[in-house]
Length: 386
Image 1 (cartoon, rainbow, N blue to C red):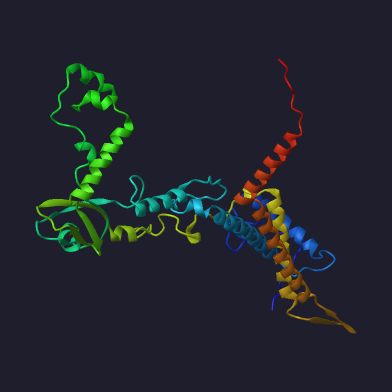
Image 2 (cartoon, rainbow, N blue to C red; image 1 turned 90 degrees about the vertical axis):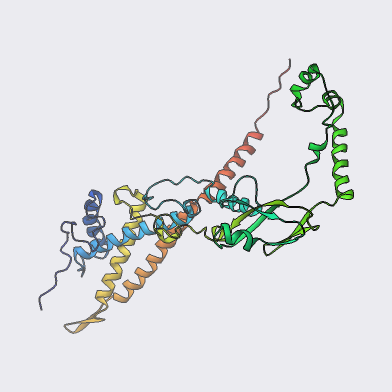
């Protein structure tokens, strides 16, 4: 068997020497990888001891460390920004980019509330309007059969409001036979009452008198007249009292499938918008753009990976016989040390990232503002005497 070469003291070119080639074309990575190999070999005992690794082994560890750093930072950025990114396009790479918080998620929730509350504004489901004809002597009407089956091809509908009532009291407030002069008409035009006939009386009366008269009309309708009302269960409409003539009843409704089909991406490409952690467009970082603290972490993590590989190599043989004695290899110790260092580095990086989260930075900004206010409160306030 041919003798496998070990670390000779320097490395060859990086290009096409890493398993994935993620950073091979980046100038800073091409410069730093051979330097890392030399540094890591010396940290492992070279040249006092042979290091049973080749330059490609060191390059693989350096690439893996760079990918791990990129992955950890990107994972944290995804978690920190996911609330703002949901629903955005997956077409733009967000790596190394600042994500500005928006009210998008809050607006989406408010739209859902607007839908359920049937507010005059808001909502993300089309509120439709329909009507049926109420016939004399018939109280019960199946809106599914009379309207949904005809106008919505049998689709399920959800009734949100039914319109039917007497003429508003304000329209019956005025005497249609009263007459006024041309001058009076001009007098109350600025009040918006130019089209009403009892102009002077209306203008000069106090507001509470208008309210009392409107309430009297409504109370009269409620007590002395049989006002129509309705009862709605499972889209079965019952009119009270029994209609004595024929008229239309209008209603607002939603299509049930419109409300249940609010999941983005249904019927379209699943990659068109961000839905969860898995398709947020964060890619591998550019090594050229990683700062010195990040590169220091990468070197340390790469050294731990190198120890792990070297430990695996030396663990193949626990001892090596020599004349009159034997040499015990330190493979197990290297692997244990490497595992501990990797765990510590990951923990340290995650704690650092946690300290830079949007929430943590906001809390620090609040504390700084409070401390500044306390400091300013101790500044003497000058007194001006006029």
